[in-house]
Image 1 (tube, rainbow, N blue to C red):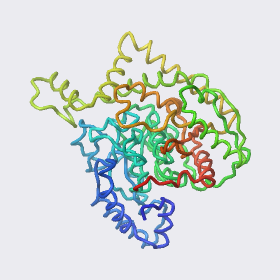
Image 2 (image 1 turned 90 degrees about the vertical axis):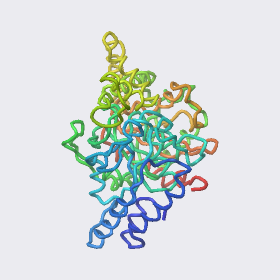
Image 3 (image 1 turned 90 degrees about the horizontal axis):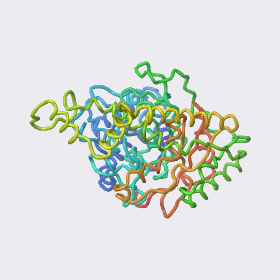
Length: 483
């Protein structure tokens, strides 16, 4: 049962081949057996899962149907879940139980999804390796000595190891797409505003976006269908009709215009990944696509702009964690200043502290214009580059990451080296565009992903291209040894 995709689970439940309760018990036992190797979960919710599974079976017995009704999933541990610890991978929130459900959690629960638990993540979603979590690093199921990518590494590792078919995740600068590439999954970052951020603990409010991680584009379509939609509680959520993502999966790619930016193929890209990217281009050409070289001239400025804007917003968002209202509080503070300093110093890890300091500096008097304002201007130039490109092509294709996954601890002493791994993904967040990573091969036994970008609200186009590619390749069907 653990090898079934979301789509296959939906068909199995509809045909009464198994019940949601049976499936849930199998997966919970599998998590208990295998997750100690991976550390992909922070919290398991066995009682809730079995209650939801029984309720889903009862709804099906009463004639209800739906692709997510009775389907087991997990939530990245920054989506608030009522009465369940929502830690954000941080000591700061280790004792925090949310008093309400995030909109994404509520929508998926209403659709009948079964929550198996909360997945591990980089602390406050800050990281590209899932090594900054208070609960320890997550391991990549393809090689337990390597990182699974971050910050949604727990969700990615759990799905890749077949502990569950799909999971929610979030993407601020590539945190869905990069772990998808590192673990041989399909991961989709929707258009900014497509999925509600209400109840999603913020890292950088103008960049964060929730989305699905699964093994196939078909499964991502199913999960995104349950997540997407307007939410009046989120002022950044856009009131745009949600199409039937599954209905568009089988459209022809004949005449599809694919742009390949020349800037992607720089000295920083592993040539073996470049070869796999071009092999995927050839595969799509066989399906009728037309390929054209394009230019994104301001891409070179994306990393510096992102690493000013994201920490600036983080320093503002994380100012609420002061040891007073909720979360971690230091022992026996001498006075209010000591309370603030020690609560934050003891509650936040090194990477979070580093980014708060960078952000506070960029927003400080005398530096705001030189750093933050300039970064926002560069952000606009990057968006303009994409708008010009999409006048010529329908989607943009390139590598998801410049390198495959690295060994645990290999970049801990050099944060800049880890930041540079986001070079291909941060542009979509800066511009607010939808992006998808899909499996495209292996380098030294480690998975490699290809990234697709599309105009605003064209998630269906991305899913269509990825699905057609997956019908004609088998990369996404490969399973890590031992899982």
